Image (cartoon, rainbow, N blue to C red; front, side):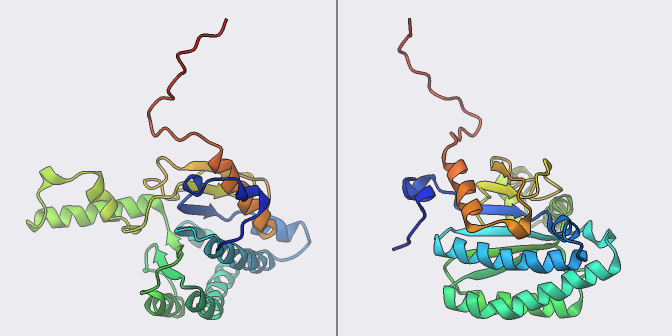
Length: 254
């Protein structure tokens, strides 16, 4: 039986999110505030990733998606990009044992083009050895941009129409969703962004159409299990109407 904190114990399980997406912001600011290089903040952020993944698996969530490197992040200084790629390789090599032990399935979303061969090798191996796992799905958004994802989906659909494999009159939202990088995953119920920024940053634009947003001023390296629980608690407290209206009581107050 999963033991939960007092912040979650009173919340019915059907009010928990199935899929939590994270925008892990604040590594650079964390490092700079301590007089450290930005790479030190990213390394500290990896420790938070381990903590969040472990807790998500323990809570038996269905999926989490981590925005680890956007397609726009290539504009950062070359030494910072190199450090991020190295950290990705290290994380995957070290954490594969945990994924195997905890029945965690690993998935990557984003374009392969441009990623170093050593990063692709670690990604592919981690996907391969965890492919049959049935627990938490850990989805890593790497070299990812949502507009690019939607454009790639549109291109794939157009090619299927052109070759006669798809009738254009049958194209609907499900068709589009099935051609996104995230095909097969439930849409995120909850999007958590750290470091207080109030923007989406080209992340899962299609998938988060009805997600609840939770923005915290906590920098990602300082994000704790208690902060994670608070995000789930805040999610559970909201009424999700998906475009409908709340049923009003017929009782009139005097």
